[in-house]
Length: 233
Image (cartoon, rainbow, N blue to C red; front, side):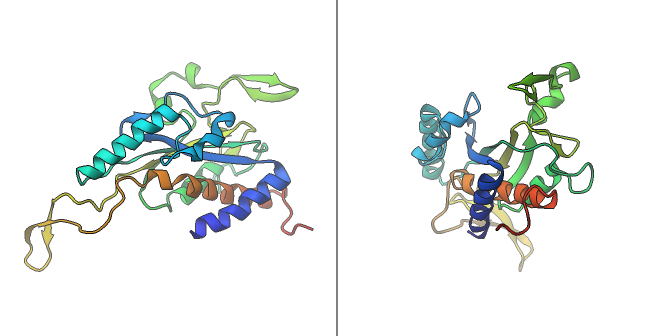
């Protein structure tokens, strides 16, 4: 809740001063995944369903997977994708305080987060440099790249392209299924069944939290760089 409260202020600050817009959505639940990245036109559909996926058909499959996990007393994880538009060039630092480092540090503070990737991410490790390199061009009078495999960040600095990152969430640990463990008193094998109400998937709750932390980091860097004054009149 505190992340979202602070993030709401940061999002307004970024929008008012630099026209920066961030949106996050459920890209994947278990093995159910959207085929394509959500476009800015699709962002209004993110909150049109319970799983926060802008693709209606995929959202229905995700919901079914979550309900199936709950019925079996289990849980599923997933991936949130975050896209930030209109980021100015030069936010970040080359080494200490790099934009990727600070974003990762903030996002790893979210419970259940176990992985983060930017742009082509781990897929980029499977292709050649000639395929992964982003070619530069002039678009509407501005320098841009033909692709965005860098995810909007190179050498720790923003490059003016959308910042695209993905956050992996593990399945919730508290499940109704019987699990093996250790009895600390007897030092012998034992079993555990966690009673009570449990979330079969925490991923649909995450988009506003990811939005908030991304916005907080970007606002911090924008203030440090002088793009946003420390005190607004």
